Image (tube, rainbow, N blue to C red; front, side, top):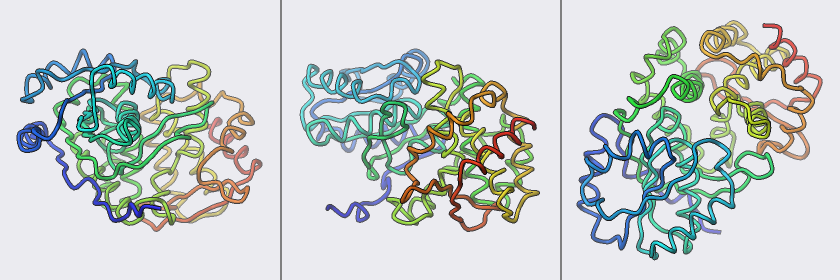
Length: 356
């Protein structure tokens, strides 16, 4: 098997108000080796971001645009195949470049598409949402869902350049800010120290001040464990064991909640599991739940059937030898621990959270 650990993690990357300028310079240097350029967007990004992007980046006048519908429901393998056929019909060969311009779903889909199409074409990620800038665009993961299981099918593209221009955040509605805010809060907890102090006490509207720090937290964690061969990178899945299960049910039921909402609920419930298991740091975890309660309206999610959520959790990728596990820092900035959980403990935490 190819040792992908030898690949540098995003050796070309930029984050800040000049990131698109750096992408422009990169394309001027590298553009001659691409036989065609293709840009994947969702319909919202197409309307709100693409015109400005095309105006600021040279050499995209002949770029082909591929468009999907926004939202988690687009993360399906059948759509990857349709997009691949679209690339084929546009004349894309193995010298093509695919640019992902959008949020987490666009980045995930584009990564898998670029990896599979003709066994691999070049990929550039241009995240435009807070969620993508602090989390989804970094680390090299991509994937799609299948029959309610989050990210069941996917690959790794750790070498993909990333250009995250924070000016794109100007287009985000409040709902989309909150989807990224949940991941930013999680990464501040992992970092601990000053970042956690600031994030836990500051409003979500200050998120742009912490984008770079949150992204750096993820990059540092991934560098320490690039392909989850240990437990360090699994720490980035705090809140996701419950959150992904809830999100799969949200998609199936057509509820109007996003990834960040589900992760926020997952952080709240999983923190109560640590409380129930007697882990240190209960006061800090209570502060984490207070931060979540102040920012998210999750009552409809808490009304879900806990038994159905538990059943959906059984597909989590951290499960080993039949044991469902969560990986957490019990206190801000602490080393990760791995905890096995059973249905009784989960149900107790779910009920306690619903009674908040």
